[in-house]
Length: 309
Image (cartoon, rainbow, N blue to C red; front, top):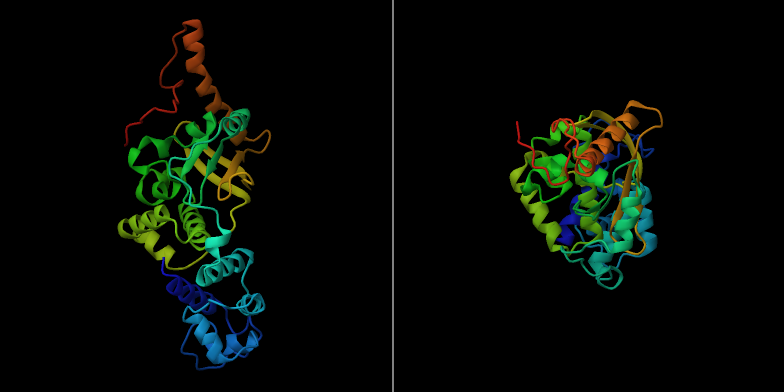
């Protein structure tokens, strides 16, 4: 991706989000731009207008840590935004080539012990994804949980592609707009962290071409750390689920995240996950005991291709 364009658009979008009142400045009556003026950001960061203008044009190469920190304070950047600014600066001066791990092959597979860890989680969906939102490894419950994602081969087990290109996502995510914002923010964060990832370039290009919703959100340049929180889902087999999640960066596999979803103990969502897990067990019982069961109520197979309505 064009680093100068990324820097320019990121800084411009952050400047537009800060009101004079938020920055402790008089608002005045005649402002031709949203947010702060360049001169105001420069004053807040204790640098010349000329130097700040140079930075905003995309020339971050050689900017010192002190300058970047002053800029982050002036623009009131959050933790994820500050990290994104540093990543853009590293890419601008070439240091990312020395500090970033080599781009991972798309054929990466979980080693046996990691799959054992995933399989040991039986009460909730557990999966490993990369910064492009590819599902790389799952436990059985996660495979059943994301049955909609796997039901359409064109999704290629990618959560962002499912979110924006598959109509089923609007039922699966009751808060679709929020899910869309999260997906784009994760991809934008990855673009700053790993700017030379061809797979990410291709994915962003595909989504930008095929989805107006994605293209608009991508242009906002929002980033985030996606570590913990609560989400709502509607699963076709068990209905509404409200699940908490924890995302853990994997020290042994830089760039990958292990995510586990859990439900509040005693809640209807916990019962929903238990039912989904039970539906995974039932076909095995049929095979072991020769019992006949209703195939509608007892089949959530990882490889099941559900017909679309």
